[in-house]
Length: 259
Image 1 (cartoon, one colour):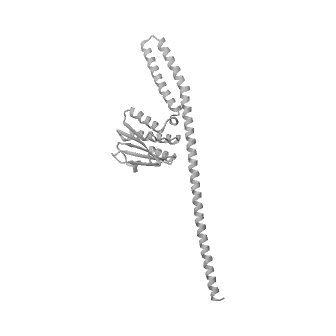
Image 2: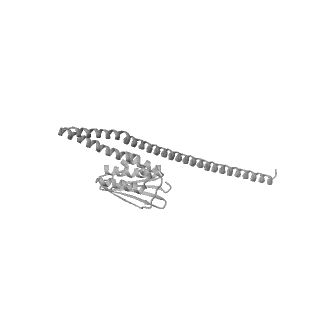
Image 3: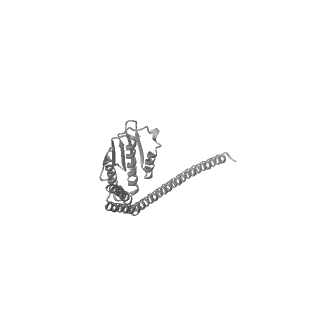
């Protein structure tokens, strides 16, 4: 074999070797890309499954609440109404002053219970969340808490904000309720501020109190905090909690417009 043939053979060998290496590199890249696409597909399927589960849970919860509301109104309410009528009849027929007074007291208690049951039944059966905007729902909640005189709840928002999703409205309302209840119970606050605003591509809910605050590192696993965090994640929201001892607590929830 001549020198030129050896050189040609070496060159061809090197070319085949380089092509072989390039083939391996291309194969590895394609494998990684397909693996990534498969993982993304699995992730999206998991998210869709979680959303379907959440929707089902909310539907079951709503149906259960409506059932309980109807049972309170139709069953317990009717029995208490009948008991009230009986006591009123006894009070009318009885001439002994002391006994009549006791019967009237019982009748008053029954009527007060009926009023509370009707209010509870109405709150369970009325589709308040679906029928009202998020702005109105939070405004109602803040007004209700302020009327209890335990602390002042201040609400500010942009009236143009509209979230059609029942799921998102329900979760943001529950987070607001949870934060307010936690602040009233634990923070010794005098003021709670609730702000709802529209940013470039997301909606932000900011909840803040002027209470005693706490060390986040010591309280990050509290049930109330975990509930709020888990709920925000259900609608692809970001959850940011800030608090320092003697410096109040602030919670920011951000959700994309699509939610």
